[in-house]
Image (cartoon, rainbow, N blue to C red; front, side, top):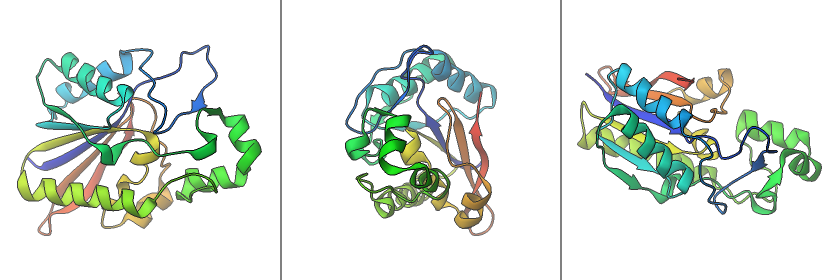
Length: 206
């Protein structure tokens, strides 16, 4: 047994024949399919990692993903909305296609966001606040819920900052693609004498 935080990205919000758009905090789209959410639940059940509590961003896509996953797993787990993990605010690029976003900010700025979490001009994102939220979450959960598992369902813009709860966050960020796929799972476990957090899986695609 170990103390765990499992972080999942919500399922798809665009159909295969639709052009995806950059959807953030201000656009509350529903899921267009259930498969990815159900696969999360099936994977966690198979691996014996069912959560004791779920926190989800207060959006249709995240709340529904959490509920469908647990329905597939055949368990009833409390799903609580948590504003700290709402998707980021893309400013004037909200609801725009990737081509439109690149036309405004440039490919270099988008690459810096994808690879180094450097916020492009015009996006209303506070990395320090998001990082603090992840760190506080890990500290609070490990202090109050030893040997239990927490699941957080959020979006790519927020999840990319989760590695900062690791002791060697800079090394992790340097060697890993921070983008988590829809329906992707990230697993963090606490172990060792200092109860340090380690990443046991990043962007697992069940």
